[in-house]
Structures are given as structure tokens and as C-alpha cells.
Image 1 (tube, rainbow, N blue to C red):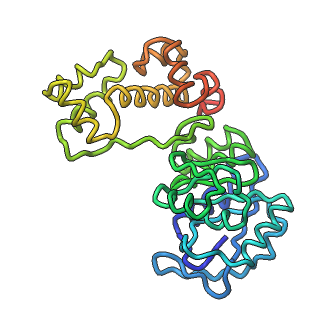
Image 2 (cartoon, rainbow, N blue to C red; image 1 turned 90 degrees about the vertical axis):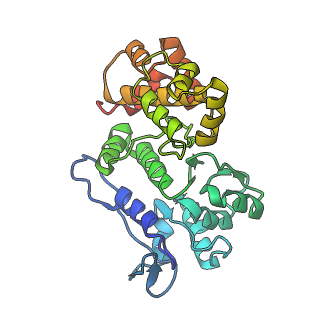
Image 3 (cartoon, rainbow, N blue to C red; image 1 turned 180 degrees about the vertical axis):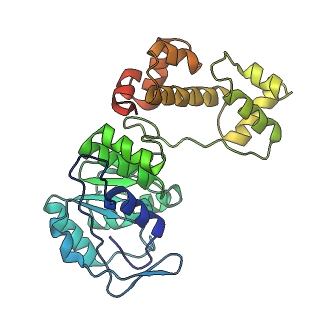
Length: 310
């Protein structure tokens, strides 16, 4: 769907995921069409205009409709658009929103009583304007079957890959992800929780220690070890670590060890015991406990679904 004020990144995400030819895949791929919700040239971000000649009547028999970010959450979508979406949904179409595109879905009433997500900056506004929706601001996407929502712009990639996985299986979704040069799955199963990224921090001592720890996740690191490397007392280190990362040292270590385990399960044929050892989680039982807590799945199930060697 294209409308005036179109976000080109999100439009590009949909096009890249569903609109490119996939000769390397032995599947009957999607038929992709861009539909205009507004008359005249579509003005998009970056000073770009699109000449879209296909109108809303085209979506009547659509299988999936992707709604990029809406131009203004305070502006109600036109009735012509919401009516067309409701008719298409009644005919079996799946409706998928990216970022603020959720406000278009909300206007149809199809999210009433359902969970949904959007970019964190819009979550409070969505909840206030639509109290009938269970807004989940801390997850990447929500799949309600025929109505799906994703968080900020890049989360549209996660949801799109999820939808491809639903339609064609993990092997195809992984191949598309590989071509996009993105992770096939950011957090496993349905537990698509956004984790606070730890990259560069103003606190040089903390940043240096994080880099040091990431190279030694397979070692039995403790908070004392981290504090000693940063030349701080444990108490001072914990306080400054929390200020820099928004989490605790123990929680940070666990999350990064789980991420290391996920990477090993996806890219190697190492035994579960060796994955536990090399990720720093120690035992198979400990690995399983953290996977179930973090990702709501088991290491074996995760490998079965997302191994790139399949």
C-alpha cells in the first residue's frame, strides 16, 4: 500500500521481501503489486514521487496487504481505505503493518481486543487513542493470524521473514535473510523481545570491559571479574554498568551467552553440550533453562527451526 507521505524505507522493506524475483528458490513466489491509497502522484520521504496507477479495487482479492508507516498518527485514514481493507480481510487477506502503519489497522477495528505493537515512540499514543487494543511496546512483532503488526521500521524485516517462514518454511526464510544479510530470526520462537543494544558508551571503562567480556563469554566470568577489569569496586561497577547499559552485569552476560548459543546452533553442528560449553552457559540443563526463559523454546527446537545448514 502506498499513500501520500510514504516512508521509503518501509516501502523498500516490503518490496525487498516480497517483490523481488527469487530464481534461487524452487517455490511459487509472491505476486507483488503496489496499490495507491491516494489519487495523484504519491509524495514520499526524500523528495521522491511515485506514479502508482493501481487503485484500491485491486486489493479485493489480495492474499497479503502490507501497510507501511502512516503519514500522521493524528490523522484518521480515509474511510475509502479502511473500507477497502475490511472488505479484503473479509475475503481472506492478511493485513500486515510496519511501524505507525498500525494506526491504519487500528482504524479498521480489526485490532479490537487483540495484541499489537508499533514503534516505541508511538506506543503510548496508540494505547491512549485505542484503549481497546492490548499494546505491546516491548516486542518486535505480533502475529494474530490474519492481522499482524511490527515495531519500528526495521522490525518490518523481522515480521516479513516470519510471514515467509509461515508460508514457505524455515529454509526459504533463512535463504531470504541470507540474501538480505540480516539475521533469520532475532530472538527465536514467539519471544521476539527487543534487547537494549550495547555498542558504544560515553563511559570508556564500561565500553572497554564489554568488548573484553564478549571475547571471553566461554570463560567463567563473574561480576567481580568485570569490575576488576574496569578497575572499580563491584558496587561502583554495577552502578555505572546500569547507567551505561540499562541492565545488570549478570543479565548482560546471560543475554550475550544466549545470543552466542543461538549463533552456534544456527551455524554449526556442534552438540548441545558443546554449544553450552562454548557459549559460557556451562551445562546442557543450564542452556535449556535460559533458552526456555529467554526464547520460550528449547535449544533442539531452535536448531531444528533455524539452522542455516538445513
